[in-house]
Image (cartoon, rainbow, N blue to C red):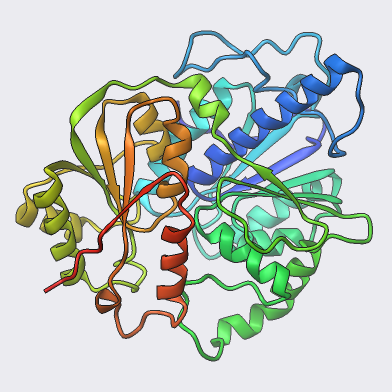
Length: 404
């Protein structure tokens, strides 16, 4: 089933979530599940304390989805059902990359099976698409009481934040970028992705700077605004007034698995070459070394890895290239999956141990050798990647492979 565009019902939803990647959508589902669990616990004890904001009307404790146990969510007797328009609506700001779009379509199916409304926006479908998207969403943004977002660095999301009047803002994980976002917010810095090259901002950055600055102010607690970060990442510097909620992938574990575990090892790909951080030849050598040393037979490609690079990896390493149709956390939980999962510094060294909790699967992480970095890599790249590895509490750290 393809995601459908359309209205959110006779009334505007109390909660709007904006996502641009499959992982962001997954983490919105995790956040909604955790929110419903907390609300149910509060109702059972008669407590009214906890984060303010509207109730969600789907994805409640004990409900099941199409790809897990059978059945549809039972929302009878709960406040804030999707039917009365006060629940959660997911807005997909669709990218143009075919792999990302495919995974987003599958994740949108899962969200609908949980009972949520999904609004699919062709946000990048031509020069006029942003104007149509923003114009169509503006009325909903002005009436929404809570905004959930997966990428506070996104210019699209930052623009939408200047329109909304919501006083309850939630940032869910967009991978390791969440760590950088929280640190920048705590230090009062402008929001810029960690892999962006250092130096003076470009012309587009300067033009967009007022919008970005206003969005950063909206994401700073105060004046009646509540800001929550829902994350599985280690948060070192917590901005004053920001609520940090742990994402333990309870929804994923409840809906999928446990997986069948194979005897071999699987290798997780990264888009560090595509983002200009790591030299492609050095990356190939590192993958060859890992496959040879640990007997890996499968390579789970990142959705942003180029077909040319993946073809070269397949030819020169003999690895089976797997292009997942869902985020790796769900693929691993469904199985089959190798007894050991090998990864370079990335989000999965934090998320996979949580998603695979209770299984015998081990996650191992390899450092990025400084010699692998390109001359265009951001000066912050090495320190950031090392930090990702250093803070991976439940992943086994293995010796770095030195490219020769």
